Image (tube, rainbow, N blue to C red; front, side, top):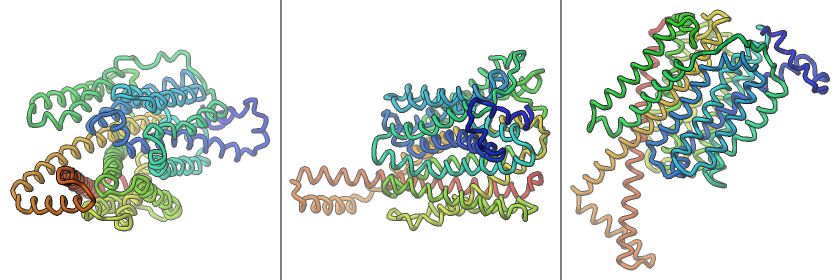
Length: 524
């Protein structure tokens, strides 16, 4: 489909569209693509922000969050692999409208879930619908607009994503604060419904190719089995790494083996799902590696911060949401600055390395906070976190695909979004497992320390019991209240230390990535 023919869907029976100029109709389509993509970002960021409340709502442990995220990732990646065939077979109008309806059905199912299996199934359905959105809309930017119009379309597309990222945390926090955890899912539905209506009315029917038999089911099942096996290894690592190390190693080996088998099959297949041979450019592969690192760091930080601020520092949920939104707003403001200064920066490598160093500094800042730190103390870290996204991902996006031919762009972007889902799922699993593991270890250490300093512990208990007694508690209830307060303090302290340790890990990852960015010669 050529850019000129792609604008012909405005031949629909919508008479009012004829009142708009050609540029206005283009802008309307650009806004629709941005909105459709933003739906997935909005829902996913809201979900990650509210993860502890959602997992608690279905009476599951934190480790289960990795399983729920894996279900979404698997559904999304299977849809990404089928994206080209489905778009050609049904046309983008029917394909994206259907995908949004499936996404909405999964969202409704998630909102009405009462158990972990129900939530896992609902997130899989959400992933199947959501997997179509980002890849298809970004490909449509290149398909529906001429080279002269693509920069404006890309800017609107990018601003839509960052705007949704800024809105999501505060929206999730306010919905939970004023209602229940299920409202996080309901909050995304109006945007999805508007996008579905726009897709049905404005997108092209494309040029269906009935002769295309589509990819075989075998490679899709093989890829899904590989991802599920690797995710299972990650979620079980917390329990099996010492008790059953051989079993864990075998599961990891099986997952890696299945993934290698899938890649080998795609490399040698005459009509592969992924055209790997066309994506061998060193620039593209280096860009993919940096994409993975960026999404890993970003999603790991996104998972930790709400737990760190709300449960470790004791900040109100609404405050935590608005702090996250503040960081995303810094990113949004940074985009406007970047768009102005980028043409004057012939070399982007120093900028990207600086963004990674900033993220390392922000993570170290968070890891150094005292237990009574308030929102003002977190501001510098949030600014660094916000600038990280602009300084790293935007230049990477501009450099990664420049080496690909136009006909390979869609395949390259599908591969990139597969990697995005793998990185997001892996980061969530890593965060959940490491945080729970470290918190358990710190709690055990604190309990041991209290047992070794019985005099100080008893002195604290006596003071706490006296304080409760002054409030009217009898001796028995005052003792129970003091024990409960001690348990809460130990839980909060162990969570704070665990979060700070995880932030130190993020800082180390970011610094390592900054060194790699400086020494590599492909992205400049």
